[in-house]
Amino acid sequence: MFLFILLVMIFTNPSETKFHQWIQEEYDLECRLTGQHFDYCLNDGKEMRLTSSAYSFKNTGIYSTNKRELVFENGDKIAIRVLGVFGMLFSMEDGKLWEILN
Image (tube, rainbow, N blue to C red; front, side, top):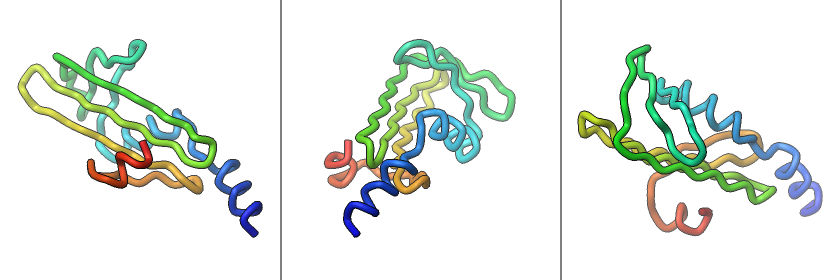
C-alpha cells in the first residue's frame, strides 16, 4: 500500500508550469521571470514594475513547493507560498510546516 501511495505521489507531482498557471489564475498576476528574478508583473492588464523579487521552486519527487516574494515600485509587497502534492496546489502561510517542507 505504501508503495502504491508513493508511486501516485511521484506521478501526480505538479510541474513548475502548473504552479505558474495556478498562481496566474488564483492571484490574477502574471510575472515575467528572468533567471531567478522577476522584471515586472501584469495585474488586470496593468504593468506593475518590481523593485525586488525572489523566486524558488523545489521538486522533491513526491511534492513540490514554490515561493515568490515580490516588492513593487508603489511599495506593495506580495509573498506567495504554494505546496503541490497529489496533482493539487495549496496556498500556504509562512510557519513551521512551510519551514519543514521547504
